[in-house]
Image (cartoon, rainbow, N blue to C red):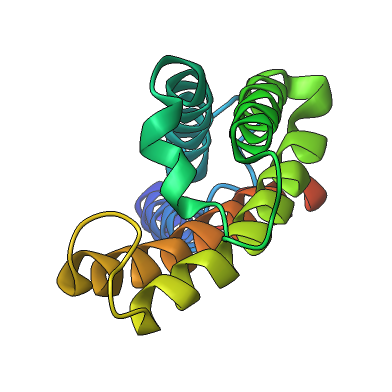
Length: 160
């Protein structure tokens, strides 16, 4: 009889412990776990590297995004391509990932006025007014994603 009571208590404790672990994220797991921010980090890094390479392969595509008042438009396109390749690569290297995330944030904030300007321009730089209206929220979404990725490095634990 005592054994049966002891077994029931152990089962209750085990179930309670299991529920506790499942509801408190992955704090107790020492191994690497599935983390959406790691996947997004990889996607953003590849996107930045790809976009940077495109600055060299198709500079004419990016020249309309450079504001009229700036000189040396092609040089600016090439410089931003180099910057995108560097920060994308840094994001993939664990030791420098936080620097890469900060660099991407800087670039996204630098490009934000261009996207805002494009929304209010009579003739958007590339595409239609509708395309400019789509690009602006995407820019804010990218800023949010990279901000969360950057914060996930700061806390040594999964963000979500």
